[in-house]
Image (cartoon, rainbow, N blue to C red):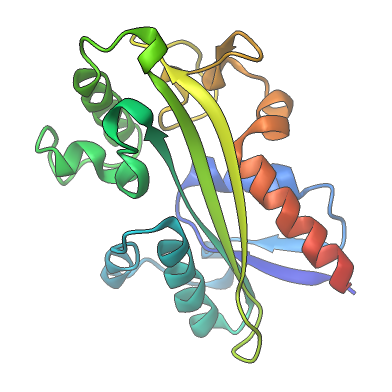
Length: 214
């Protein structure tokens, strides 16, 4: 039996990673929002207004599952920096916007760049030993109205560096140094990143759960 799994994201970089991570689960057909005919609607901007990764992920999964009737997974991810009391956390995607250092019409790479600049500015004067951080991914899986949602969490450690390095990945990856490999997440190969990233950890757990149900 093939499981049709809707991945509820409009982030192209995130979708690419999730497809790659789930590729080894051969009984799963990964579907994107555009593939099932779900065009963007402004109400989507109100789906991630909660204070926890769990609530944001579940909000998205419930919304798109309700529209399609498909088994749906959505994740909320971000980076939590110890020196910033866990910020930007759930506000990672809008960090520069919240801080007033970027225009609200920014998106894609321009928004990534603004977020990274805002992060480094907030860490000015903080020594490297105080720049520890962790990526967090919380995936919420909604199978039907009659089943409780499932949550899968992944975390990956790093240290924030001022000078960006690497052209792979997206988001904060060029500024997050992985001490295990001695390079940033943006310098990793796709295989290296999937093996240890927050999203890789969480979505492998999603795949294992679905595999047991086939």
